[in-house]
Image 1 (tube, rainbow over the protein chains, first blue to last red):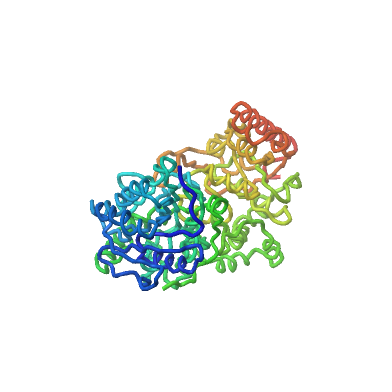
Image 2 (image 1 turned 135 degrees about the vertical axis):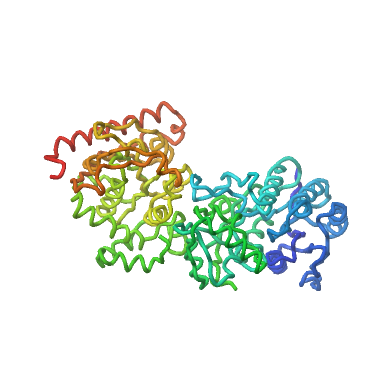
Length: 322
Length: 282
């Protein structure tokens, strides 16, 4: 049975050194309902930029190591009387592959949830999931509800597979124990450093796209992503919620808004072209990850988040972001 | 189409008058933020659709329509029509007819088979003018938004019919009835006369459409549609929204009975229309 959370909450943020993590920490500091913030940065990261604030404590933890996670939760997190864990840590680059990446993306979350169940103060976990967990196919609805089929399959890249597994791992634990879990399936955050495939794609002066297709996409701003996380922290509900952004537009409109040149190319050329780009310029965009949504429209339906969490996207993207 | 709305508007202005553009500014649709709705509809592309369908409607098929005043000004409704003609020009003519005869203008959201959104260019152009792929989630969202759906309950078997079987309805599928009952929408039966004769069928190929996932491709006897006269007849709405509650949509017998009722109403309209017409081109 979960205990009632106090009105003023202490929050632990994993992935606090990411743009969303930093923005969230800043927003929580300005929020009178938050007392202490424990910022967990990657093992090789510098300390959090707000570490000198007396209400912020910043530590470096390698979440791949289960011993370190245990020491984090039953050390600093217990000392700070953390009530809510916001889990943002996830490899942003599709280059991160193999068992170590999987351990970071999935096993770390599994460990945090198991330990949080018997933690003296943690009552709530908020997972930032991703719209990439949803399958995109011609016979599936354009408006994506939370019950939409997930992108599971042997041919799915690890970048997506790990996100699906982390999401499902959190969902499977919902209601089984004391920990109240919220999974926020966010539309793509179009901002640098967030692991946005779309941002990386738009970084080129020329954007290739499959000829004849112009699907509708939905994008989220950093401010709205932070706003949704805040709503989830202070809500007492648990469940899975889509978090759409204010910007719903066709792919070509996105290219134009960014001031790029869109060139339609035959579908079979898309994969090789972007493999070459990635090899020679080190870009992160992978056509295999984005193939479905470059053909078929997919827009998150945020009605559950609106009704339960009272989240409504209110900050359109300020084009161009760069 | 992967072109900007401003360019679509310039193209459309070749046919669409300033008054019509003004009328289209009252179009009922849910702008998702950049002038498009979540499914891709944009008013300037609706005008572009008029550029494509308008001359066919006015000059080529000289469409006569009767009973369109039954279309509600607002709120959800399902238009259920017979399907014929080997290429979906009947859908384009109903689309044009509803757009022209409603005030404020309403775009009927035609429900297409799953393969249509995966057709390059065509899928995008159709989506911009209001078509959606036939999934349960799409139709549910649109009816909840109070939109007008255009459904062909015969499906693909209806559009590809041998000449000898023209105006013989294929058995209606039941999805339209279930949707209307569940979402409290009246069903408006529609009979289209003329499309059956526009392109007589020569052969059906299963091989040609394979690369695009199209189940069957009709090979017509003529290279372009004949200038037959179209007649679009609207019947009295079947008020399933008043007769049943949303939970009744779970009763398969009732849903089948409603679908059969709709089929009978469409069949009656076809018989009336065929009895009235003096000739295929008249």
